[in-house]
Length: 447
Image (cartoon, rainbow, N blue to C red):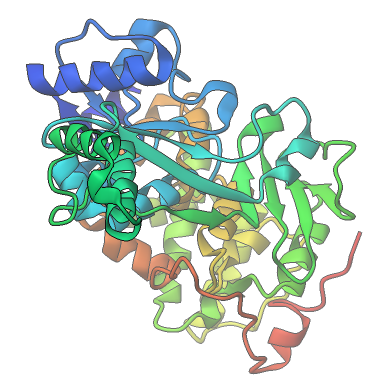
């Protein structure tokens, strides 16, 4: 993993906490939330305030995420909004934290100049003992305050000011006036400089969770389903539950809910370039498995290697090659069913609010596409990376550093389209051709 860290592909974009004052504020918040403190003089934090260095020091990388739910957070600076979320248990956590920071940017800037803001992504579930508990997670509310209670004190002062203004004979209430003076000493003039934080409540209809081996729960679609990485769990309150290995069922689910589109039909996309790159990634995996040296390999080198390997290349490579020939006008339209190894490599999510979740699931179905895997499902990328040969590790790390890191936003837009809004309603594309009615390559049959 050292290679990834050196190239900024792991623990990249974390925020440094490297001054005595900041460490002191962090320790106050950490003590407030967990009863623990750190002896470290400097460290780095992600968007939630989790630090891998402190996790190592404490021997507990879930010190802000006990039981893997109701994640706690520590905000030191607004710069954390662009940091990654490490050790994610739910796909919605980072998006909610970023929305909270952006909705309160000016207030957080003022509050964090003198104290850390600590809080929790609160829902009604406090343990993940059974898969059925996931279905009780309906909404997440962000609760936050400074460790000194500035927000709570400001709310109390505001309430007392309102009583003072509206209640009869409040001028003669010495206790009320004394309370107002005491709170004002802590908060300042809340009538001119409000220190309250806007509350954020997010409905969690569909999400991924790392619990129970990895689950994708789609509830707010026309045809709900629970899709598991391994065998589907028992006792879940949903009619359709099946594993990712049930390719026909997964394909039919995506089709019925209008969640995906063929890359070759997507608007404003260089489909040929995307297909070629996917083929290169498959080729690299085969070459590395066969012990080929990929050091400094160019696309020309890879084409020569593909010709040399010939029949050793897998069906997924040949399927994408057939589709590429059609795109470039030199071949017939290939019929690629959901059982074909190339099928899910030919798809991307449509433009809807579940785009990132669908692309994450597609990345899990197409693990040889290392670029999409890294962008959409970093937890799985890091897990698989450890089992790769040194040759493949080197090629992938160099590619991501040289081709993706230089223009992350541009690459994501080219591959997946514009970023969807958080409140973008579910949409099913209008059928433009028979292909839209029966699936990208023909009718998808249930298993």
